[in-house]
Length: 298
Ligand SMILES: Nc1ncnc2c1ncn2[C@@H]1O[C@H](COP(=O)(O)OP(=O)(O)O)[C@@H](O)[C@H]1O
Ligand SMILES: [Mg+2]
Figure 1 (cartoon, rainbow, N blue to C red):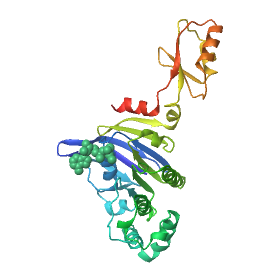
Figure 2 (tube, helix red, strand yellow):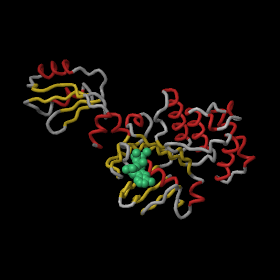
Figure 3 (cartoon, protein in one colour):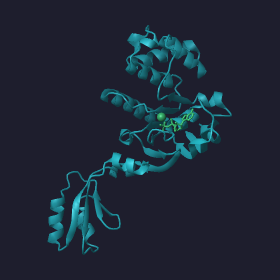
Figure 4 (tube, rainbow, N blue to C red):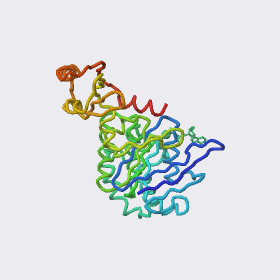
């Protein structure tokens, strides 16, 4: 579990993260969405203990990442946005070194390392220096490096970004498997829809602050196509008709019906007219998740 309280990180006078509060529970995938420059990586790097907060605190499994860094670090696996490894290292010795940082004896670590390398299909390249690894192989290596100490908390910085569809599926499956094991997972992305199918909640960040947290239930209805209707003579009974076309609500002026695939505005129009409603506006409401996101963060 990760608890971030009033985190501020300034670079000179610029607040890259501004009084941020966030909690990532055990067995939860928290998506962190925001445009480039919103402060996602800064939040993640501070949580990984790589940079120090200007103020505020970050607790990892109740250990303070600043005051008790050596212990807290053992509880975190971090996949940086741009992983950078010693190019002349070979994978197994380097992974053994990382295992050592988690307090695991190198020889004890070897079995797990080999298993992870097999699982992520890079075991055949065990004798190759990392400088000769392809981008995809480096990405897999960086995932293994984060998992080697079997920590209970993971920070994935734009890890789905730039992967081919198969890679996206593999990483998504991995993250979901980690959630099943009860791990706390923070996954950032500048593309909201990338997080939609995997995150339990999504925190939207703008100018260093969280401007909204979207729950799983809200996510389902967001970005779904819906029908927007206005009638001149509404009454209490109209909701019954609207509800048979999906989840009906109102924004104060329009009725909005969401969440039913294939709901047809012309059929709804017919039914409303048959029930003597005067329909003066009806149309498909096509806001996509990405439109919603961009409207919110612009
Ligand atoms: N070391 C640094 N020195 C100065 N400014 C930085 C530094 N790191 C990040 N920033 C600035 O902080 C802001 C947030 O950056 P970042 O956390 O990388 O955003 P994101 O990951 O959401 O794209 C950006 O304006 C960036 O330029
Ligand atoms: Mg970033």
